[in-house]
Length: 87
Figure 1 (cartoon, one colour):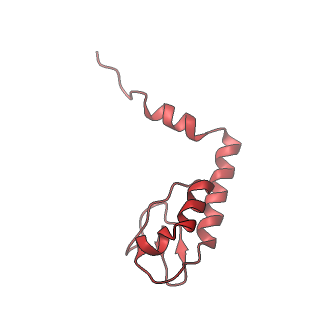
Figure 2 (cartoon, helix red, strand yellow):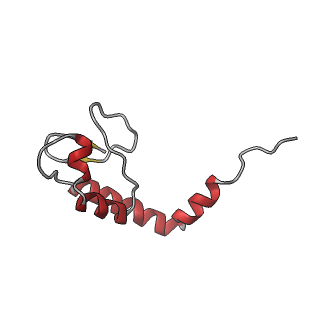
Figure 3 (cartoon, helix red, strand yellow):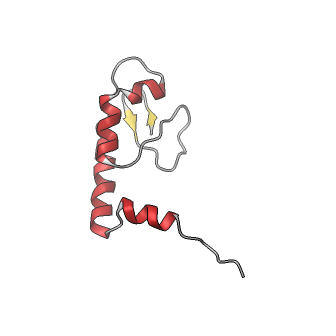
């Protein structure tokens, strides 16, 4: 996520210049970050940032994950599996 002068914007490719902030693409994480005013602190700006664009992105990702059946639990299970076996 980055700040564009008007508000926070998603940057999933991590290609935008300037400061950025990490956020899990989960609605609960977004709500928590907004409640704690984490965006303003991480991006070092005064006041509350508009996170409407980020909210739309997070909802879209959550919807896609729900439709594909790729849950966070499954993602964690896959992360623990070896990529290659030892001979």
